[in-house]
Length: 386
Image 1 (cartoon, helix red, strand yellow):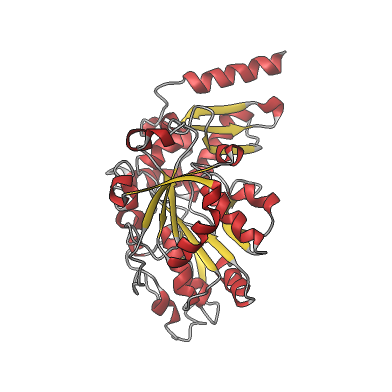
Image 2 (spheres, helix red, strand yellow; image 1 turned 180 degrees about the horizontal axis):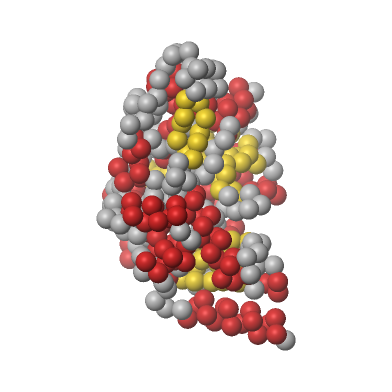
């Protein structure tokens, strides 16, 4: 039976919840907004399946023949709508052309981050772009297995711990499963994300929710990306350079990450996934001819299946093979966990009991340069006045 004594030893991957034959495990939010398994001991039959498939207890074999590339989608519109180089969309389209299914993270109507299933190209936009909150997995592992058991192609994307969790739950290899993980800084608290949205709505829209959120807008360039929230009236928006936004400061400053993220067990150049995708930070120094400030991906291909798929899509990308270690010189999150901020526990305790505006004041999360956000606000107000 799973017994979590230290929350740093649980990623919330939901493999234990998904495998339980008696459905006696529920994923329940703690005071910080993170999901952890809770067992109904009255229903438990002590089969130990949950413990036997936990990826933190049972290590899985990783792929050890990684190839690394700098890569850009030749379709400029897709790349513009993507977080970095638009490679995920190519992989997804390849699977959809095989009448397969793509599983990844999207916002629901209230901007809660959830894993969903897409089986047509018109809905693929929902999975593009960054979402900085740990996703709700629900029954997605079970739904993935059902599709695979029907001999369907499935591309599953998520954080490294979610990919390992899925493969642990499946307990066997599927030839039609393609997995894509990310260079992950860590997952922020869904509670922090929700409280920040409430603060943003109150500040900018009289408490009403947004119509669109883009955490990686390239309006100011890929390497200096912006955070943008669009509200319903007259396309009025809040916009801030990424490092000036209060939520991004808390996220990048490691104030609101899941406890397991400070000692992640699933980082490294070699992984269990078929692909690892990320931003190729530093491309402007290493391969300047592949930097137009519209987004370049670093792509790690870990498996024979990944190499086969790359061969099928490589005519649609501009690419260059690079040294794996060189490629992460400005992207240490590939191999290193985020450091633990000394104020993390105090911040999360205050988060439980306070609004986000209080946190902004107490932890000095105010933007230092208001130029971009103020210009957008003033423009929106003038437009409404006219």
